[in-house]
Length: 629
Image 1 (cartoon, one colour):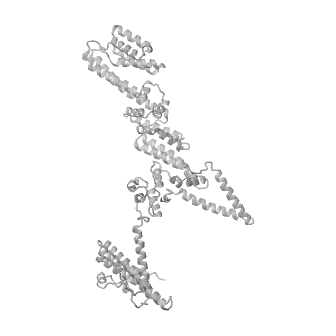
Image 2 (cartoon, rainbow, N blue to C red):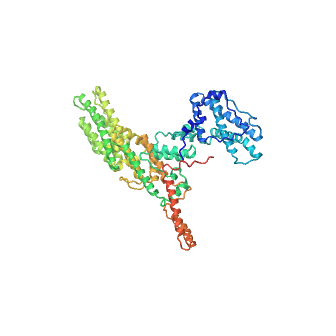
Image 3 (cartoon, rainbow, N blue to C red):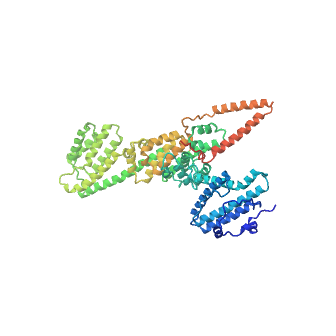
């Protein structure tokens, strides 16, 4: 049989002549069927369809702007005319008796109606030709069917089609076909019964991977335009991590039943154990990825080395402050002609008075008080004497095991920073005030920041520095530490890296990345650090850590109502026992032929393959729509 060529056929057919809309309008097609049945066999349906398509295309080309109104008028004409035709058929009236058709007003509507009428008449001729060949036999009933059949069929088809079209545009249950993943989200949000303004709150899909965007569109095509919003949000979280993590449908839905089924059959679902192991590896990799971004200039590898870095940063800061103080003292001495214009007797008097007020005179370092007494006797304190006294007092404050003695040393040093001038040195007061102010500011800075004082006084070793002054410190102290070290990028990065190393260790992962990631340990310590994370990490890293904690929980948490067999022995044993019993019974019934064994293996293999396909499918669970309330 040769292939049918529509173009060749149409070139030789009378109906293939160019369509003239003006001719249609001058001689409008009759909507009524002829009273005598035309027994001429119809044209091939394909050929007539092509002719009709060409005619409609010409109308579209001639009326690009009024086509929409014309199509609406044509639809209204078809519905009203179809109702009238149906009335003719039901009442067995002459065709055209109930002519209720709306007459289009626009030229486009009139031409579309004319083209549609011709197509309808062609279908009627086809029915009449088929009926004329006698497949229905003869008789009055058959003649009635032949006479009114085309009108009735056309009327029913018109009304049914119009009703279906109306339902498509008015029913909220059949949304428009989504084009992009964002369209799906917006549409899902709009249909949500929880919020009328939910569409504006739908998450943005801009930074979501192309794979997830495509999965959202594919899922929406299966469901009619929606996806499960909670499942999608969890997939978005896992997809947004520096190292993306694939969730199972149960993990993404957090359904107790699905999670239990997946975990209880993890030994039978090919590929699931490997997927769970890969999830664990990627959780660890995410901590390392965040660490690498937070501390590009940090090369310390453990908490001891982190402590060394932070202590040295504080010492460098103190060295700059001391150099400034010494420069101001030197300016004061130079202005006094090389002499140090501080009155030793006044200094001793001020220190003794302050110690008495604090009830610390009996605890004052005896060597310091003896030196002050000797210098006061002849009022001969030099700048070197003054600096040596400050150094000795700092050493006592750092190393003494007697708390009262350390406190007394601090009181004496405060009295020294007041710089009581000798009589006649009033003109040196501005320089003395500058030196006094610088020394007092440094003294106060050390008192305000315990980590600063500990680093300068070397009172806390490096291996305990991070735990005491970052992990275990109050929020405000950590904030002050960050402020004091803000000019040292390596130090501030080290604070963040030390925090991440602590979280990694809390999750059960060693520095080499080995171990099973514990979401419980990770989230517990992340929550404890939450109040001060803003002083330790940048906002993006904080968000990524919180997302990582969520995703880790999805992969490991067992919601209330789940029945996960964590040992994977009891459930497996029960299932194996039941299957073995059924298998044995079938084998006995077959008189020894292993029909039960064969059947069990076939069913088991098919079930496992199906389960593996569902569980391992990327971005699974999107089509599991929540039940409407």
